[in-house]
Length: 274
Length: 319
Image (cartoon, rainbow over all chains, first blue to last red):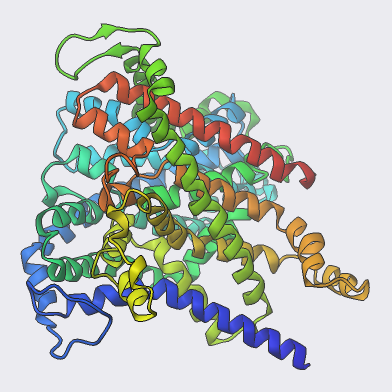
């Protein structure tokens, strides 16, 4: 009994150390963000006179309202389209007889290993040729495609878990492939779709390299891309930069904490499905 | 977080039975009659994927065989760009850095994650267990750019890393870690460890909780110590999860971009230059499109040849 309790205590102790190591950089950022602007803060002490209005200033200086709108527009362009395409393809590959299905699937899976950097140069010229440079479409269209490997993989894995008998019953009732999908399988896929939606939301919000290469106007970028520009501009004002960074990363943490259940299911249980 | 999360998928895909065609259920699927019509379900995704991923992939290979500044005429140079990637000391060093980062992005988080996961597994469910999961995962969800900015500040001359060192009497060691030729690469690597630890911990924790508890009991009855329990029960039981962790973190190491672009831009000198940042620099600063593309192709091949053995190794005994 004591041995287990001691192990338990040691375990908790070490976990606390891990948690502190995770959080200290954020704490340092927060404390810096509360110092007087223009000062060069040191140490990890609570400022004598915390300057909460730094956040207001950073919001104003970084002009966050259009950035938020821009990120939302990009997310709104990417996520629903990716969900539709991926659930169609996932269903097709899992439940229907499609010629060459295993080859098509392999093609998608190989895409999982392609670093975005390896595509960024040709994508730049391709987007330029389409006349889309410096527009949000320059991010939306490639991102939908770049998410297909994971999204199709994800939805296919879901549809594989649906009992065949369901489709068979629908077929007996005279429903075609489309109606079976639309009225029977899609409603059942809602949990898988919502987990996928959260992941795609975060990845889009945090997308950096595409944003800095394809969109030169920071106000048309994703949040992460804009943060890069903000660092370039205010890198010397560490106080303002800290406040701005916290504002920009806060929504991702909020989404994570709010949807934690779906999130862990998405990233963890799904990871080792089957 | 393209780099940190998208590869999660890769690991998942490559280790999942679905991905390897060992789908659990292979029953007859309905609708065998109108098979060609069913392509309509797959076609939209395939068209997007083909146009914005496979097509640029081909273009990358094409560009890599030319000397082109992005504007003027391109000159055919054959394998010359590849020869440079594989012989030029600067470029070779870039590839070497990517592998050095594996130590920090993969080895450190997997080992620490294993420790943390075994500890968490023993915890009774309760607020502490929930909070620790949440906290350890936060670095995974924030933009990597933000992680870069946070750590840029932590490592700076007046940053917390140096403050702590001075406070415990190690002021001599204090330095601007990211500006020092010796320490910049490990310092950048540790940012990766910080980001990846939570993911590995939670993946491994999920795995451990699926191991049959009777195996541990049997080990205990046989008088197995903690270490042999780890070796003979935990590690074999975690084969698949370890495979996912290693795959995901290795891709993140080899294809790192955001963190390094923000914190060091590859400097000081070229001491933290990695393939991702080098591709960006060559293509958009130096305007050497061919050279950048050769590096891009080499990077893709490197990722593949690194990942495939990991997948083989972690899946073999699954059958």
